[in-house]
Length: 298
Image 1: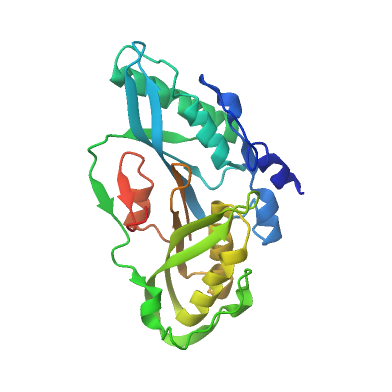
Image 2: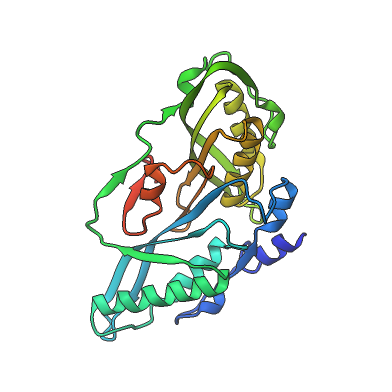
């Protein structure tokens, strides 16, 4: 077991009772460098910008009089942080608010909880974490509407997939005469937790602008090769970005966003993009005050 897996196993794969009272010590931070080093991603010269956006759908606390308060919590932090936060530790930490009393009103309760969550996560991750509670009547904002299902570009009757461990050699490109933009959605992303080996499902949204055309059938084969991979969500997104970035030219635009479905009441949405591309979708997804969705699964 390497150092990352050892740290991640603090709670993962174990029966943990959690805490009946607010307890920030439950949080576990995992260093990003081991996986990045494996895929030649330089910590001091990242080939991308981006954020990790989280949604916790089952946050609850109480006022001083025992009035229950339940909201959707959204928080984010930058991918330049040295650490990512382990998801089960987040669940245990947030559950520790459930029976803890804060403030005389619902508004005051939420304000206190928001402050504590931002401070606790920021301290643990050694970076700035921004959090917000989404009101229960908030409007859903649909994003990535201009992205096309990648399966529309292939004949599924003749498409044959045989590799289900990450296989970048499956990716094929074709040179074209002019620069073109591609907006693609892959709705069958699956990988597995690196510790518990439980499956994680999601939608992958890919944009790139280049004279090189990444053949869609090769993309499907490559993205499907993650089905037997064991990595955290954020790691998968970065691995995919790095492999595609290696195929393209330096000035090409590239954007990869993995919107995973919720597990244990929490979903994680990592976003990675080239420094010359800033789409509106990223600004919307990264706005903690907005409830943005990419598909019916989220």
